[in-house]
Length: 119
Length: 113
Image (cartoon, rainbow over all chains, first blue to last red; front, side):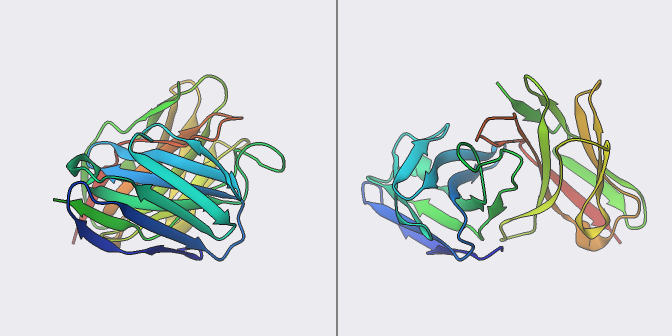
């Protein structure tokens, strides 16, 4: 999986609790992304990062926050988990994206996923 | 806004027969198109992409895809399917200059022995 790990791989939590998912890469790629996968929707972008401490919202960002303090780590936080956030979460990386040095032709490579269940 | 449609939720074929997974897209401008495959309990694996040039793109595991601008399609094909090709396939599109990769809903392929 292209030098990408996600932790935890499975998590069950209760409504209202905070949850943090971690994505770690060893490729030194600039861009990192968080997606959620739900049946019938494919993958939808939650947030992405174009560098250390540089992040932006995707199409389904409500209820989620992210942080990137190091090139290799990208954290996704659910401040107060809800049942609608039960999903499979994927991290992706790409060498470039947009902006300086980026190319939107670059391929995104995905991690193994985290299955989150909010009861 | 860019979008992708995969008109078939499921495709069933016999091993050894040709496999086609359909994808149509909508973008303003020239598209960048991608195919990914997802095996059970795994992440998405990149198969191939079209950026520019030859309309027939060859990728991993014997897959290829044909870009058709007039029909706004990017169908995935394999001449002779294997049981091990059974998986969930996603088509994705990006507009030049955009960060966002838009995915289709996915097509489940089942290859029977």
